[in-house]
Length: 193
Image 1 (tube, rainbow, N blue to C red):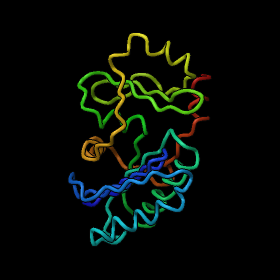
Image 2 (tube, rainbow, N blue to C red):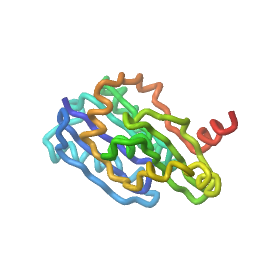
Image 3 (tube, rainbow, N blue to C red):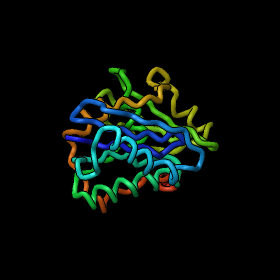
Image 4 (cartoon, helix red, strand yellow):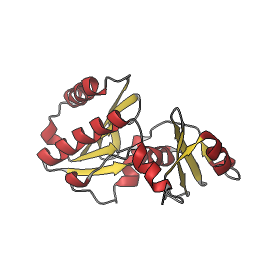
């Protein structure tokens, strides 16, 4: 089974190709506002490098945010389009969940992604299940939030595609029309509940 991994939520674009649980190739490109120019050629390249065509794909895995408004939309739109037109499975993973799953820690995990105003935060148990809701906190609120949790902070922003694949393999795929990006504003709205 061939799986295409798409991550565009940040400046670093990551496109991966897996066959079952084995990484065939992983391409990364640091992009400042060129996601729309780079993503499709990266997907084309990874398929050609492995003598595949889009119809050979069985599954799409997409990081659906939170992250860059435009970056997230580009990745999610491409993933949805491929899944729909090829009639293949699509699965999502949040950027925060991605780093929790990729980490080796056997304890709780506090993962954050920074922007210029604050941090997006996810607090996960050792099984990578969300303990608290995803939240967006300004920098001073973040400092209060992490009190008593500093031992659980995950600094590494590495992506372990094998772990992501294993984490998602027993999760149900989603109707491509139901895959939605997670934007900053929707996280801020959760805080107002």
